[in-house]
View: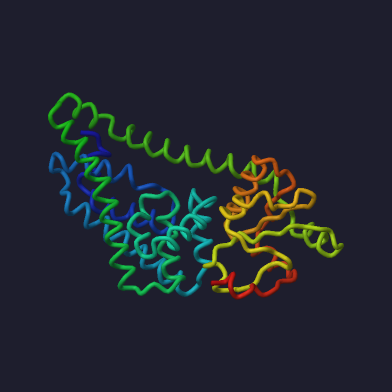
Length: 316
């Protein structure tokens, strides 16, 4: 038996606990390949399925409770930090906010299955003031649903191998190679997706100083605030003259967007993710004079540029 496999069998529960805890605390090392491997080993009773589930549940709850407390205390700043740690930082803020708005606490049931959501669901739950008891119940149910799905998938594979001794021997011999290839392939795929998106973004974005000059010089400019209503809670202000619209509503009403003005979109996502995606969608529809604001709302505020209060209906 390979040394690495022997080590994993001997210390498997500790390895699972440390790996899942590290991932859920924000380090982008996916634990799905590890749980699949653990599920496979339960078929030969080298690991026990109930113990695997209990260990993964404990590790995830410790991490999620930590981020829930931080989210409750530091709000959107903690959510943005988590998204910067995630490989899905280009989308996770907007996706998670939409899930919570539509589904409420039930969003926690599917968060672990959706790339990017698992990292930021807990701090957003804390940010919106979800009672801890309700959070703990829904989060635990979501974690169990995720771990059972993954480990049972591995168990199914293990049962097949158990009935084919030659395949089982071959798999054991190349255990480390298979695991590393699965993990490396997963990481490379995510990194390539993110690099392609960021490359297109850098070519399009507008500097805050440029927008400030346009406003000061009286140049017509169509500014759209794409932030989610949750983002208004800690600071209910926006840029002068900005319209508050959701991405879907802006795209649906694209016929009303002026073609003879500069169109500037901003959000609070890391790397201006939401604004950049909407920019690309509008450009594909033939609206060429549209650009995301670099740094979004946070950078504009950091530079001390003027802000105005958001009208009450928009902040609801």
